[in-house]
Length: 390
Image 1: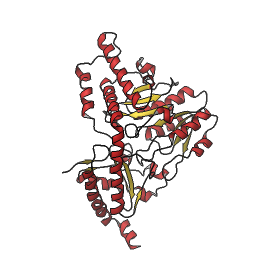
Image 2: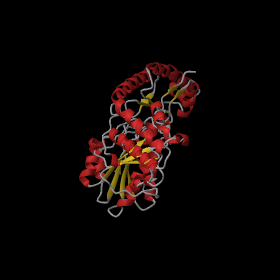
Image 3: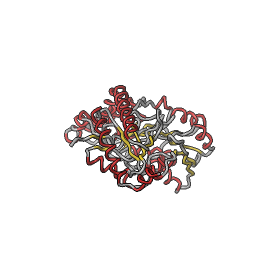
Image 4: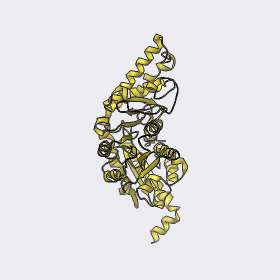
């Protein structure tokens, strides 16, 4: 059976070059980076080299990178670390309504610690209005967190415009860039952000590694207390193979990004056009232009997204209904609710996320099998029969 993987927002395959780079650090160069003898110092040098590779990918300096276990941990460290370190200045935080669960739940946690949190609404495309952000900032505001792009609807936010507002008001700005780093050009200086989160699982590196960019020795309370690792901002022996993997993946992404963007955008546009041509009563979600190049998301009337995924799975097609961290909850997506999608239509959500490993033949295969699966589900749906009869 043919296999077509179009769920790269959930996880990417680890590149062969990345695996090869990691292998020596499991058994040959296995030393603890904190050891004072030469085996340890050699590993410390390797870690710093990888820190430089990650920094170059986003236009940062090496000493502005903290290695974490994931993008979710990076988000937690950014939100909680800033809040706890700056709470004497103020206890008000602003996040958008469509943030990843690691940001939303970090904010909810802080609410229980007497912080005030504003969940900023978005428009029908998922965009944050800069004027609305400006109006929400108060003298007590210490942090704003707006994701660079949403992995469920693909919309890219106007981060540089939003961060400029915060810079003028003396407010720290964080962006969750898990969906963008490695998929579009990302430069922390152009975005003018104070903190930025990265995930290796979205970048062709192994799961279990991520990073947080933080500007100019920004004061940050550690979440994991231990030794002096990561200059005291994250205790615990470093995941050396994972760090090497993230460094190599960053190096590859920096070289390949221009060709990747144009290639996946072409595939995305062909998929979108084909879906609209072959399936009626379908809504394209997210911004039509300001979106990730390999991202196509739809809500299909009178079907259930989970059932559609199972049918596509039987044909060797792998997609998603939204955030990989939420799909098992079997609840209507809060992102789709936030952009005004009616609950009955939101249940028919499907998301395709492509990478440079995908090709035209796979797009044609999806366009062959997807309409058949939709027709099959609709033939069993009383909702669809009522729609056709009305």
